Length: 286
Image 1 (cartoon, rainbow, N blue to C red):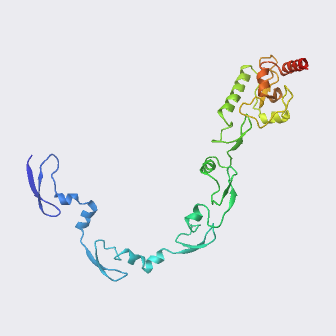
Image 2: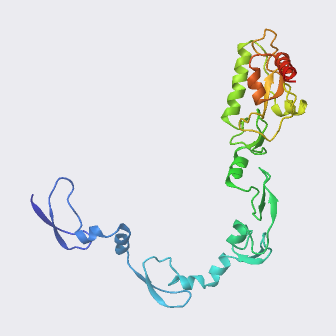
Image 3: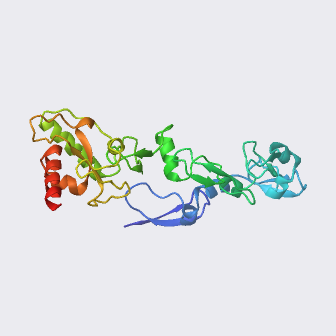
């Protein structure tokens, strides 16, 4: 390729470059390597001015500059009048502090973000009701803050629709504490619909309290603290089974509180039939 020599359009110095396809070069390599702002400043002419603060001569390209340095501009009376200082009382610790903003409510990050030195306040979380110490916010954790933002005016504290155990909801439409409880309710609804019988959502806790925590099969007491599929834990069972033609449906009047072991032994029999079997066994054992 051929080489060509031209004068630089900025500094006037001659430079040599290789001719290639496209537009020819107009500037030498030193002018091309400088930033655009620096090249723009080189084209402007410097002006000698006197500082309004210290009355010292200084060279400046921007004619709007009045002070030679930041120290002179910050010490000027004009600078102070533009930024008025306000004396306010801290909302958390009550001490007086100076600020440039009227909207500032606390004196430091310690008071604004959490516990103030020597001042602790215990309040209840507006979402879950848990007590926490001396935070200006209304919720105790990020989860409660997110819940208050997504579902205002509601609480994640709820009892399971099947086992009536308290649990914390992840979303507003959650009604059961686990997948096992939800699967049990869905299966009971499916069996009732298959038999062509009515179905109603029953709270087990109400059935247990109605039967006074007594098994309707063996007449022994039921321990409310048992769980995790313990043989003596409380369960619900149909008084009239589904296989019976007179099955009235999955309703509260057809449900009884029984032990898990008694429920497994009953199987497809009716409540009266299994009680008759147990009575015969006890009579034979006596």
